[in-house]
Image (tube, rainbow, N blue to C red; front, top):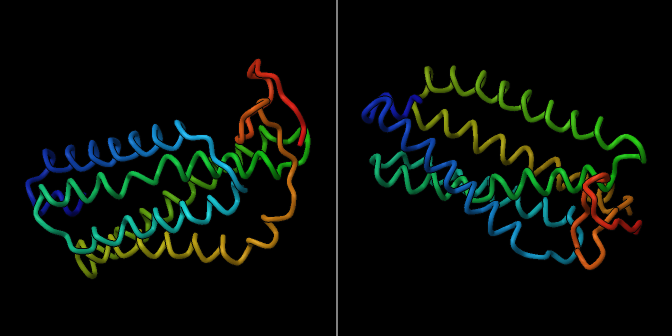
Length: 181
């Protein structure tokens, strides 16, 4: 919002949010269209790294057209990261607690968004728009550090339910043929 205020107001803000959504949509479609091999935990680490890197160019705060393109690029890894996080939580939640585990994940998303907003506002006031984007980059780096530090724990075998012939775990109760791994 702070960037848009200095570069055209609500119209620019609308374009930036649309670009972020478009990037997330394209990334989500591409991620969902592919069967992935290898552990989801390692993939989550890479997706978080790419998501964090995607926000770095926003620090340049170019003109509105370039910023819209960079915002779309920043959004590309958003949906895949969220989807993969749900897969990892599903694999590690104790039997019978997946719904609760998912609700905790959603709660953490909300708390993280609120904390990020609370940090970005003062950062913008004190250091300008670039400082606000630095908060997002810092949050991405922090998430990457946590995932890196917990890879040994996350790489421990979790329970996994997969659709026969698929590499991705799916929630119970969706009508698919499930097998325990």
